[in-house]
Image (cartoon, rainbow, N blue to C red):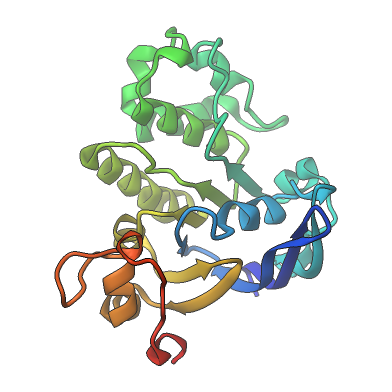
Length: 262
């Protein structure tokens, strides 16, 4: 298939603790796919495994495989994964804080590519960065930092973006703007996206398909409408339980109904 395929991926931490247990998912070409779940469910580990950032101890890929456009990625070093068009926007350490916005972008331009054309696309997508080209990146707001991080990733000419917790700590207005930009990247630049989020509501606003990850396992998947209509998803991830607004944080023991696996 054209796009990303993760098949039965397994990962173990310190040769003892299972981080991922048989994770399988797909990101077809030209689609935004959400991978959602609570903190510690294995979302970032999945992205790092795809990006080639789990090379060995203390955490390693111990089973399964990763393919992009039917070419196997697992086992490749990170720079080779990027060369094949798969680029990670990490949750932390996204930018060089002591460099200016312009210097951050210049440091990310892929060799042999039309730098001016792609820079123009970045500034068209993120006009807030234009008056801040000479500003030190460490002084940017959280939303502007995320814009810069996405701009840096675009300068690597990705065909698939792996975006980790893009909305974390941001105001609703900023979140809405960033999600709109992801859709524009998909529609205007033909870039596929695997979007990792704790913010399930936000992720399902733009996703074509979604997977829910718990304790290293995919427990449910489907279209956004299918996920939104499931009683367990509504109660534990969207805060729409029949007993009033609730979430997984409100219960001491999470007991899925049998419908979860249907």
